[in-house]
Length: 134
Figure 1 (tube, helix red, strand yellow):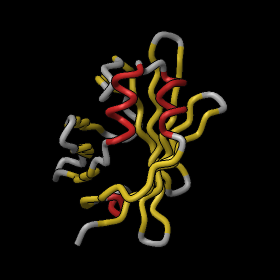
Figure 2 (cartoon, rainbow, N blue to C red; figure 1 turned 30 degrees about the horizontal axis):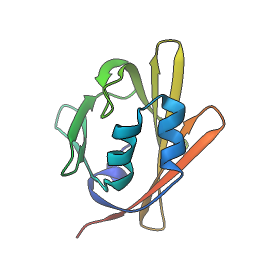
Figure 3 (cartoon, rainbow, N blue to C red; figure 1 turned 90 degrees about the vertical axis):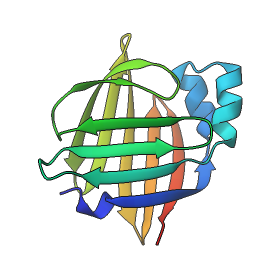
Figure 4 (spheres, rainbow, N blue to C red; figure 1 turned 45 degrees about the horizontal axis):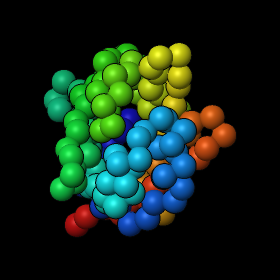
């Protein structure tokens, strides 16, 4: 289940995120803000099994609520309108976003007490690392 992802996670490192945002088609100004933002990721599950994933920063807060393996409409932090599907694959929480014939995948995995998010668009991979807040 998604239990190991539940909690508040603080970003401590971000690698290659500018290249990832470029691959997504994000404009220069939004990339500048995105590169400086270190959001917290808050994951919770309600008693109906609905997962809530909130990305909070001083720039923008986004929130998605979903059930695993059910597609839903998402408006991303950079304002893309995507059809998104979340699934669990070998202990990884996999987020697949599709829009305008394009697709990106974000794989989140908890390893050694850290949440590592690998953001993939074509050949470009960004890695964002979070630690759990007490």
